[in-house]
Length: 353
Image (tube, rainbow, N blue to C red; front, side, top):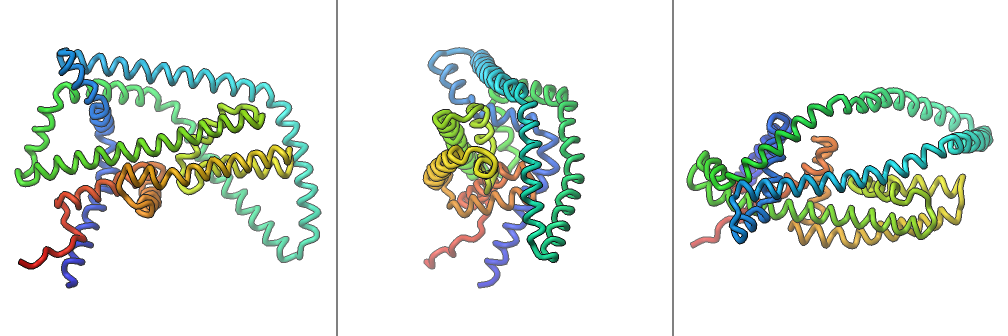
């Protein structure tokens, strides 16, 4: 009774170690071609329709779809950046006022904190002083790294080069998709090929379902925030909606990373009525998201929400920010390879004849 579980644990450990090695050491080497494979899969239904019903040569169909994809993406990106630049300019124009206001609020906070600190026992004062010193030291260690991260601009030429390679590779992969697929399958034993096809189809459909669910949740959060902030009279509603949408991609915290500090600041230093409106808006946004998330992710992926949460935690632990995406995708892949029989672990014993 122990041996099947031992084999299952060893098989699971081998699978996870292999995935870890591939993501950390293999993926960076072939990243443009990996992106090309994903884009080719995304555009393949449209390419098949154009080359089938419209009877266009497949090369021409791929070129048209890629050109349309790049045009739409570039246009949307340009319009979005223009809107953000407009609102950022408004923020920059008000920086002198914000700076003066921040100094005044800082003085008020320091005075209030000083009074509170003097009323506390000496042991608590010492503890607060030590914690503040630790926070300051942590910031001194973190800021140089953050400043170094801004040097990502210097890697822009490499990014553009990789993007061009990915687009060219997408053209060839999509044009010769069938031939490339048969070649890759021929590298594996014949008894595996049907199972590999099933794994590929299952992983792709589940991954697209997960991505669709996440995109819908993020888009809904951003739209709700933009509309809600506009209704309560907040400035820079579009910019803040985009910021909240980006924050929604953060595990655990999500929109709370933006809403809660804003609400706290409004209650302490700003307009308390506005802070109450923000609190109600956040409760609505978070409540709607929680209600929809379990259903959307469960229906699209076929994994329990707890499995998604565990995969997110482990993914972030081992892969950092990449783990937000890698964790759930690894869970989907693991489910698919177990279901196909390629990794026969944690399965019930066959019934006796």
